[in-house]
Image 1 (cartoon, rainbow, N blue to C red):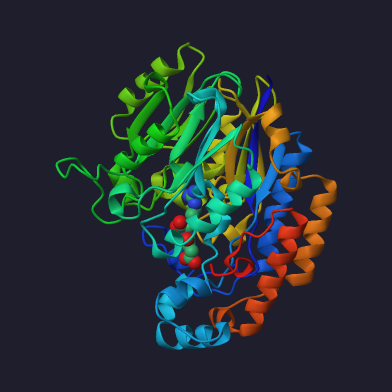
Image 2: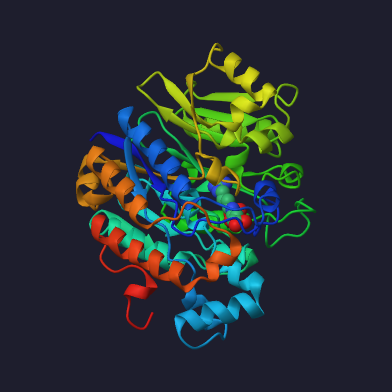
Length: 448
Ligand code: SUG
């Protein structure tokens, strides 16, 4: 049966902001406390979704989470009315408060890991919401993310949902930002490629020294077990710890793959030759392409600043792929020159399309961070919630919805404004109706 890669993009939320929360993520720290534009952010994201839809690709979306997260603040001992909680938390624990307001659910690459039905022993599509243990502001995402995934993929005959891995450093899991799949056709059994930052149970192994390794080997193994993947079609690779220390906090900041192609930086992995050999063996035929970008042409620093590798690599047809890259790639002379050369070389990537996702980039999220890839066959698409799939009508509806509820500007002090809480809950309530999700947010669930 024909299968498709469906990109589920995260919709930028009504409280999109820059709080400088992610140590190890250069853009997040350098944008701390800048004024954001939730409206512009949401519209940039919608434009990218619409453009991919118009290219003939299957495009869908995931809704933003409820922020400020008053429910988490209650668990941390703040009490009283929701308005009182905002005021007290902002006054007494401002760092905790901004963490509970984070925009971070928009990067749906981190929402979960998905294994398509062609790869799993029971023939179901498997989902595990990522625990995002390494950062407090992200570790509070998974309960609602899991509810949203269950609301969209709500058919046990086709979809299997696992609870997030146990919280804590040992099983730190950042979802699909460290997971790639290679296949001849999307519906064929593929190779699942897990990249991790460190071994959690073996201190003798190398690990980054300056910045955290957010994904562990043991977490990746647990996901592969839960998803019932075949050993001979699963490859693990360790990220080069030196690049993590240079700001490559997820593998999708230094490599991206699609079908028979891995586009990667020379310094992305430890033992690169062995990684490529294992991928080639698991892939099974000699059409597998490793497209290596040399340090001499694009340095790790250029990669971190431009987010070249946080591009989406999409198949336009069986022989042609396009790189969906952020505007920053054109602004960096080395990357710009490299991209001009790339499309002339002998590899499947022969088009580069640039999109402006600056509002997201300022927090360290490029085009690839903004999307979760879900490979679905025709029956599975029909079994999923139809209201989340992009089309001209939904694009119009969501733009009007953004115009109705989103602010043009937001600064840190606005996050404590009780009116913003009312506005964003009203927006999300209406969104769950547009997307036919039922009640998924804590404010919609009695006693949550
Ligand atoms: O987890 N930034 C996110 C960016 C995630 C990008 N995703 C992928 N690479 N797949 C993070 O570091 C910053 C939020 C702030 O500082 O306000 C933040 O969470």
